[in-house]
Length: 250
Image 1: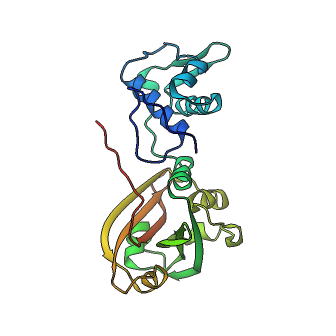
Image 2: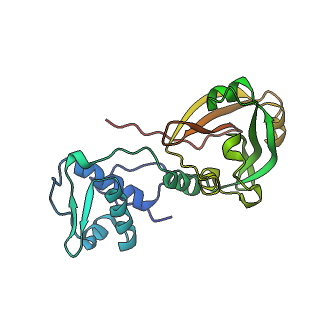
């Protein structure tokens, strides 16, 4: 991962281990929104931004590409990047690319599959996936490890229509969402999470080296496609820490 940003009054520093290009893109976006650069104004050169943020050209270029995708900048060949009109700005939910980076940079974990296959649909899963008419769903259970120690017990649920497209032998220990996208031809646009205190259930307690009914943090996540249709429900029990952080700004 890139080195931390140098102290700069324009930068809102994060305690999250986010990719350097993402930190730079966030800073530039906030400066645009704050009026430092107005519509039609040219952004400073790559060399100037590299000096200001203490980053390589490749990192700064990736940050600009991110902002071009979100509509804040437009690139003019031979002239540089210019700030666009406010009505062209978009506010996109986290993309799969970013979710994968959060897993890669923030968690540094691996996943070991324990069981997989079709199981009977239950009221909780049916409510989350909104598939009450389906008698069965595809389920994957396993343990996520950090530094070779069990971090969480995870149960994935997918509607059968998507699960049948996924060749299990091609799954690896990395984040599942990008793999499901690639293998099943789906696209995750939004994720909704709820967090609560719970107690370790049978298999979770065993695999996390906990006593039955020991306190755990329970995170339920539902991922949706571009039409708002649930395509994955994940229930995770964390052993003794939840690597999670939220920053809210106005």
